[in-house]
Length: 229
Image (cartoon, rainbow, N blue to C red):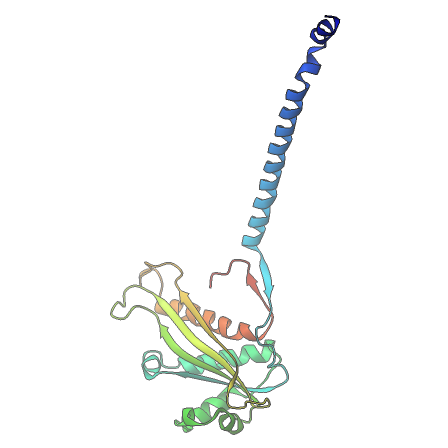
């Protein structure tokens, strides 16, 4: 009987202690979740506005004498006159500046290809020798358009290419030591017309993106954490 009276006489705080402890624990847990959510949001915001380093997929052009050879079908060449020369110069310039390559002057490469229209039939080792190069960066541009066929009003720029490297100093001088497909587009969203963007703007951005994706294969570089292309 005395024990029962003793239990009833305990202070209320002792009886409520488990509930108080549970409430405190839940509050701390909720606070922890809020802090974690805040930190996660800050990290995501940082990623959206920051860049990250991306390593070269093929860094072995460094120190080699390299010729840039770009090919496209006649439809692309007819619709985009001057494109191959522009790409050759742009890619060669990037590789010389960033990949440590000793680049054959683009004018020399373009001159040889123009004067020897049957060059695609040559083994790569012979083409490299003719261009005084140890390695070739061969770009097969199999798609380049600014709009869908038959719809010149809406911009739907697309460019796709296979990028290959022939290293004539290696054991297989007529085969690719490296090969990868790249593809870019512009605008990023559909629905842009000639009232919104000029042909020059679309071509300029699309071509720059293509040059980026071709040359970034060969040297470490910075990209947006969430790249647009």
